[in-house]
Amino acid sequence: MVTLLSRGRAALAGRPGANSTVTTAPAGIGRTDRHEGGPLTTVEARETVDPFIPERDSRWYRAMRHFWHPVAYSKDVAEDQMVSGRLLGERILVVRHQGEVRAFMDVCRHKGAAPSLGWVENGCINCPYHGWAYDMDGTLVSIPSRPELNGVLQVGLVRYLCRESSGMVWVSLTDEPWGDPPGIPEWDDPIMRWQTPPSYDWATSSPRRLENFVDFSHFPFVHENVLGTRDKAQIEEHDVWREDGALRFDKVFVEPNVDRMKEMLGIDEDTMSVRNWYQLTVPGSISLVRTFPNGKRYALYMVTAPTGPATCRNFWHIGADFTSTSDDMDFLLEFEYMVLDQDQPVVESQWPEHLPDRLSAETYVKVADDITLAYRKWLFELAEELEPN
Ligand code: FES
Ligand SMILES: [Fe+2]
Image 1 (cartoon, helix red, strand yellow):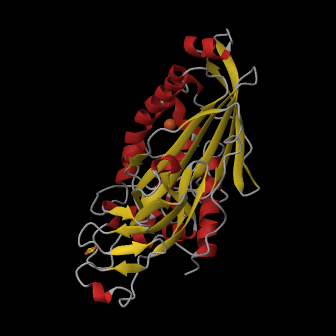
Image 2 (cartoon, helix red, strand yellow):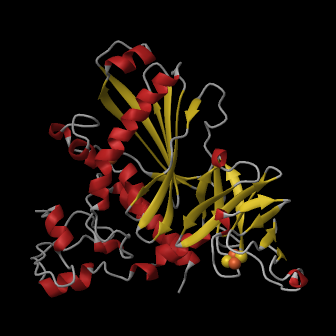
Image 3 (cartoon, protein in one colour):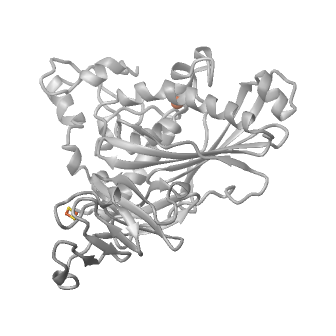
């Protein structure tokens, strides 16, 4: 019989100094829901499940440097304006000049102030502290307090690769990033109406945030009577596969059709079957397209960027081809905010906040956790390839 730890006990088990007993062994790869034999002793269990690898040394976290991550929305970076962000513990400055975005470490080479707090003038980034000016390649060109040193002192801002895609500014901290910033197939579809809400920060690692998005078995509990009911908690078999650089899966849910949706969609039935088509691109983006019985579509796109080992900033767009007013979009957005408010405290309670480096550190059940496991396996495979040591 499968014995699963309750969340509270699981959180305590193995915490340094905690007096806990673990009543079940974690599942390993290939035996995701079954443990043969008796319970492990506390010491055995700790040795097996120990997820307390110092988070900064986690291989997947180090591997995150090899990917593109968003740091800002394109619309928020106006001409000759700067925006600050954070990525993998580093402060990032994004500036737009002559239409092109560029990214630098947001640390002045003089005394470390944030140039993003300064101003852009004559094609130069000016630090607010002592007015040092850097050109758009990051080269120091002016020291107001010692002009005779202009062009003599050979220092510059650290520059990063920077690109715009799908309404976001993406940055890579390495010169040869893995892959490209993922696109959104529906982004240029003229009949889709898009809205870009502000990004939001959660106190958890970016993989934990992403997994929450694609975890169906929490719906009846965290989103009871909104996305599911407890009497239908069982998850049915569904395929999960890798194709064209994305993890793909789709599911049809029978959902209640509320009055406002009936009006917008022109569907009178009280329940309807909705196809949910997911495409997950490692390390942190997910596209969900929901297709209603009349072919109308609702799209939700989210990218989670690791601002630190246990913090993330989440960028998102929502889109629909059946809304006609901004009130309609606001209704859809309010729904998303309700779902986020329900998710956040539970996801932020997951411990450790970072993803344990070993798959066996947590317990998976078949079908319900297939997507989680497929995602982690892929992430860890890439981490091994990109950070072999
Ligand atoms: S710290 Fe930037 S000019 Fe002094
Ligand atoms: Fe959720």
